[in-house]
Image 1 (cartoon, rainbow, N blue to C red):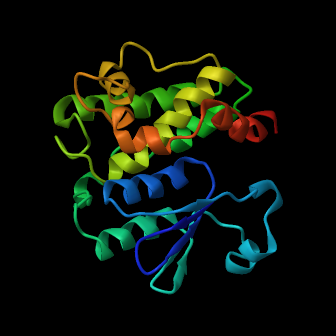
Image 2 (cartoon, rainbow, N blue to C red):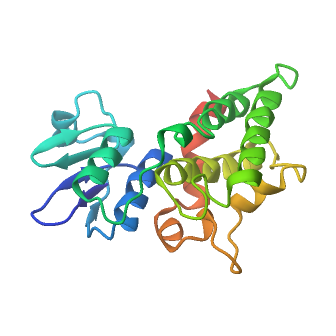
Length: 215
């Protein structure tokens, strides 16, 4: 996917995935215009590999420099386009940071007794307790960069584990479940217009995770 950002033209090369959506959410929340061009990541074109020899995504051109890391891209956008501010205080930046890796371990696991499910539940419980005391978002009442990073990962978790494991976040974690719901009565990360606009289709999420599950 190729995204033209702002004026003069900047281009971002990305595919559908949680890290890609994080970048798109940042662009949307900062109201930066962009155009997109799809890339077949299973058959990477030569022009893409010339820009990113290792095939890393997302990839963005900003001020004539190519950047291939969502952390660096979003930080660069924050510095260049500071309004509206999306920065997260350093002491809150790691909230929920281990959820994604434990999700992947559980998704790939073939042994129900290997502790991967419990490891994921432990991380989700910590996040539940944090949001209970500090929510509705990680930085309180306003969405910030850490939500834009975590939301897409939880979206993939919800769809992939639901499909491949018939698993869902337990009712014993109500604040996590509320964080992930698309509610009309109050804003959550999943109900944001920018999130709905940039999220992958469920069938694409399922297909994207299939190699890790089947491999």
